[in-house]
Amino acid sequence: MASDSTTSTVDNPLALLTLPDLDGLADAQTRGATCVWCPDETPLTPVTAVDLGEHLSPFDGREMRWFPRAHRRCVQAAALAALHDHAPLCEQCVDDASNCDTGMTLRRLMREYR
Ligand SMILES: [Zn+2]
Ligand SMILES: [Zn+2]
Image (cartoon, rainbow, N blue to C red):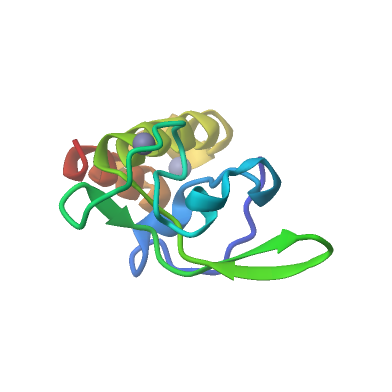
């Protein structure tokens, strides 16, 4: 899964996480009312929700602006998944993970959201 995101990993570590396709999401998930990563339909509260920021994703042949939110534990799981996607393909991570911004940022996310 190649990412050509130009967002700085340091400015917005959450931008490193892979979001599901809009097509497969329930309405409540696209509105940020429920978690974007899991089928739990309990509405998120300000205490349980992590704001993932503004995203532009293709939907119905155009770009849709949306503001996904998620559980803290789901952010951690997504960070782990992103790290598993990233690390085997990253020379720096294979060599010495402490030298890779992306790898370090994902590890920090996993510590932060648990
Ligand atoms: Zn969740
Ligand atoms: Zn890396």
